Amino acid sequence: MQHERNPATAIAHLYTEEREALVRYATSLTRERTRAEDLVQDAFVRAMSHLDTLAGLTRPQQKAWLYRAIKNRFIDQTRRAKRWAPIQSELEREAGDLLDPVLADVRLWQLLDSIPENHREILRDRFVLGLNSSEIGERRGIPAATARSRLRLAKSWVKRNRVRLLGKE
Image 1 (cartoon, rainbow, N blue to C red):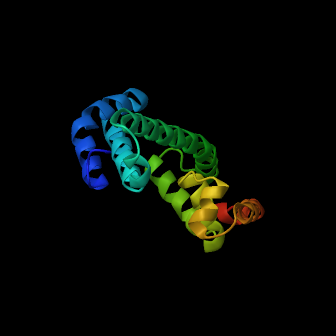
Image 2 (image 1 turned 90 degrees about the vertical axis):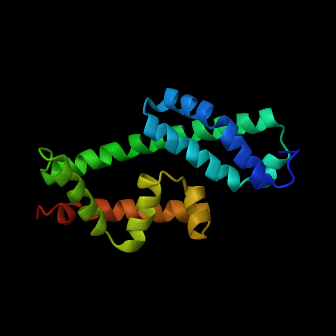
């Protein structure tokens, strides 16, 4: 991008030139073309918010940045899925809807909707979006320590109200 006057235009050129190679790389990680395309799109969206950083890099460094952004996003998604899977499977098992996955998903979201908003939002940030306490704090405009404290309170609330949430009183 050093040779481009407008960093956004440089990103657009980089997208045009490197998209297919990046999709192939992402597909090697995900084993799914659609998910790979989403990872590449996410990387370029992220690049647009880091134009100043990318403007100071050489073309090979920019490509390396994009590859790393894809890999980091893939790792984040994998970790989020691992964190979310036990919660989802427990709630589905408790809800007794395992025979019908669509009903299980509906029941899961109904359960989450029944959690007070202040707790639901922080749980969603952590377990659905996969954000860490620093990212939650930044998103919510609070210190990371406050985010951790609120997350502990939310988990505690869910644990205390588990029977009521699952309808087994």
